Structure formats: structure tokens, C-alpha cells
Length: 320
Image (tube, rainbow, N blue to C red):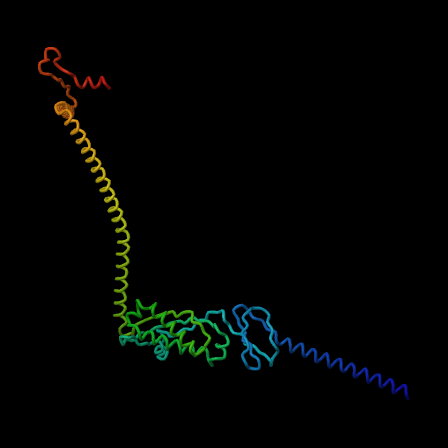
């Protein structure tokens, strides 16, 4: 009787111990599984908004395996932040009147222009884009329509159709960003691109002719500028060449005149010393220049019978 009771108590103790161990293991497994639910992975271009009991805590942007306190203590929302997204507006060729009405906008000169455009954007502040506004896409579309209509209303129809397209794109992107910032949308506008821009159907032919004339004018201007860029450098080079030639000719003539003046002054000094001899010398040199190929005979008065001639050319040749 005593031995049976002892064995029974031992079995019960072992059973309780095993039960306690099993309970601990189950609780530990549950705890580990609960902790495991706090792990998550971020790919490049993704961000995670961490919430603690519904309150914003932080934003994780580093890619890889991340961990936060398991739910419901903390939770996360993954938001794409590295992808540039596109939102298209309007269809000028649509048959649906509502779609066509979306493209019709009034210009500053009270004309109507139909245009399609695309907004390029990405998420820059994940928490705001996820929790500040109820519907991100609807807010973006309404804001973009309002910004584009306001900017188009500042320009004439000719400007929107031709030379002011770039200004319309830049101004509408800037205004759209300001609107979205006031809404705290967390969106960064990368750009606004005009696609198809057309005047109303009733006057499209006339506007096409005006646009073609404007393109012809621009083409003629470009051709004229190209011709000017080709001719003007050549003319400038020729002018520079003529100027340099004139300067060289002037310097040459000036040097020649100065040489003649110096020679004249030298002769004048010799003439003052011996006028008769210098006069005769000049006469003989002049005759030699005037008659270079003629043999000349110098006859002195009163000496014809003794030495009737003097071959100046032969004498100079012998001296050489």
C-alpha cells in the first residue's frame, strides 16, 4: 500500500514536470514565432514606415533584412520611393465627351486649346504619402488639372501651341509641387510633359497654317544665321588680311621714304662741302642710270688730243 502510493506520487510528479516543460516549450515557441513576425525585408527603392501602437516612430530606408517589435506593438508599411511613376491626363482623340472636356482649357486670349500631358513623380516622404491624404492618386490628378489650367490661362493660344510650351511645362510643374506640398502629400514632382496640343476642331486648319508659317519663319531664320556664321568669319579674315597688308605696305613705304630722305641729307652735306664735284658726280650717276647699256666717253675740255674718251663702264668692270 505504501509502495503503491509512492510510485503514484512519483508518476504524478514526473507528469507535472513534463507538462510544465511542454508548456514552457510551447510558450517559448510561441514567443519565438511572435518575435519572428517582426522581421521584414526591404528591397532597393523601398522604405518602411514603422508604427508603434498606431503612432509614427520612424522610417527605414536601408535595404536588407530589418526587424521591429512584433505586432501589435509595432507594425510597418512598405512604400515604393525609388520608382518614378507616370500619370497621364486627357485624350484629344477620345470620342467620349467627358474625356474630351478634360483636355479643353482656356487661354489668356479667351481661346480653347485641347492638350494631353503627363506628370512624372515619385514618393519622397513615405509617411506623408501613406497617411496624410486619403487617396494619393485622386489628389495628384485634381492638383495637376488645377495647376495646368491655371498656367495655360496665363498664356495665349499661340504660345501654348508653339514657343511657350517649355514655359508651360516648367510653370505647371512648379505650381503642382507647391499645391502638393500644402497638402503634405509627400510627393516630389519630377516633371510635367506636354504630349498632344491641338486647337479646337473648328479652327484647327487655320492654326495649322499659322503653325506651318511660323515653322517656315524659324527655318528661314536658322538658314540666315547659318549663312551669316559662314560668311562673317570669312569677311573678318579678309578684312584682317587687308589690314595687315596695308600696315605692311605703309611701313615699307615709310622706311623707303626715310631712306631717301637720309640719302638726300647725306648728298646735301656733301654738296655743301664741294658743290662743283658733287654736281658733276650726280650728273654722271644720273647719265649712268638713264643709259645703262650704252658705252659712255667722257671728254674734258682742252684734252681731246691727248685722251679723247674715258670708258666708264670698262673701268668699273676692271675695278670689280
